[in-house]
Length: 188
Image (tube, rainbow, N blue to C red; front, side, top):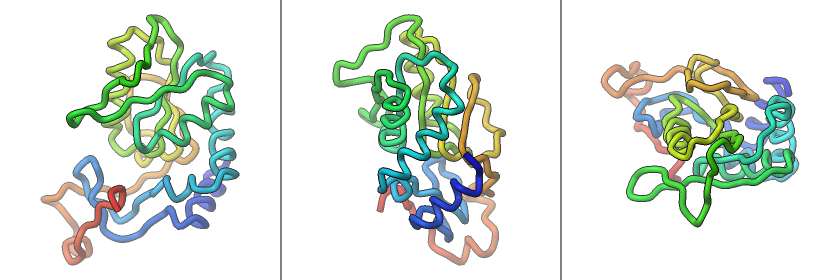
């Protein structure tokens, strides 16, 4: 799947936002990829899922694990297309945990699927959970890699769109962002 097609889906669905955004990582940005908007239409979900599956189908995945909320829809679609089991981790008292009776067996071949990665915080939490269960993590697949491949997750990484999006710490904002109130788009 070509970068331009992924961007087209985000633009057409209104999922590529411009402004001043406060990211979950605490960093600020002028752009925000609101994957929930891009994944509203099942044909887009299927197409983006197919793009990721093409990259990971040779890995022998038995289970897809997605961090909630962002990875839920795309993770389930990737698992569906791979014909494998799907589970997710979710927040409990501020950190991701495995709940709902989900189990990971030692040596189970897993793929972690996320929507957007900026610094990889939720992916790292999910990797730690998989490691606790001694899973065989074959890789991380994501729709958007905002680091253009710079984030090192310690395993193979696959993405549909690698793009370098400028981010800024709160104490070093450019003038245009200082002049505009920050929005947390994932929460509205």
